[in-house]
Length: 110
Length: 119
Image (cartoon, rainbow over all chains, first blue to last red; front, side, top):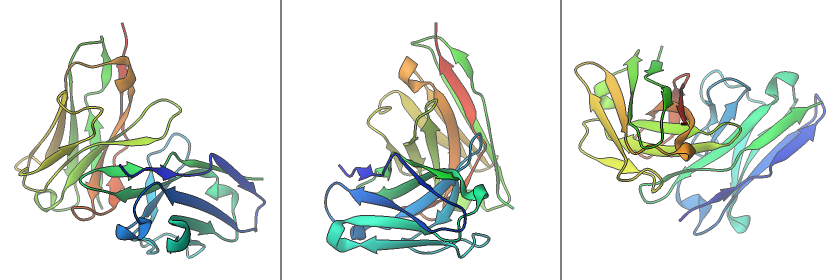
């Protein structure tokens, strides 16, 4: 069964760039699309990247996604960090009628 | 715009039952697959179950298989989750979410409803 592993937390200063990784446990992470969700405290999740690297309308182009097949991982990169980006971020993919989330990464912008 | 509103959460004793509902508007509900996703207090997101747009296929996480049942009423734009034999570990906020397409992203989420299983 697919498992997605994320770092528990990352921190960076405003204006800088941060990258959050999501590593697949088995098979190829490139076999199915990866999505990324942002969840601010006390709020429902909100999609920020779908199909590996596509941004929904309304999501700033400071958010980007990528896949690295050599490391079997996906990444979410946020550039020009703002304090409003402080949130939990979850990667998600699909495997054999099972939708899988990573454990989540807490982003602190300080 | 898409709106999903969950209801039916509350406190229930271990072994008890609860039925959640999700009222949908702003999109063609009868053409969209739907999910339930839960989040235990202080924990991450866990996918629970999915139902195809016409109700013909349903999938469940192993943790709830045989205890939870997803259903939908396309005439009322409503999604349901019947939860039986509830356990303490089922305590969570339950979100309904719209599927962008069958195996695709969760593109819209409700605000969630809290289920607490406790004696």
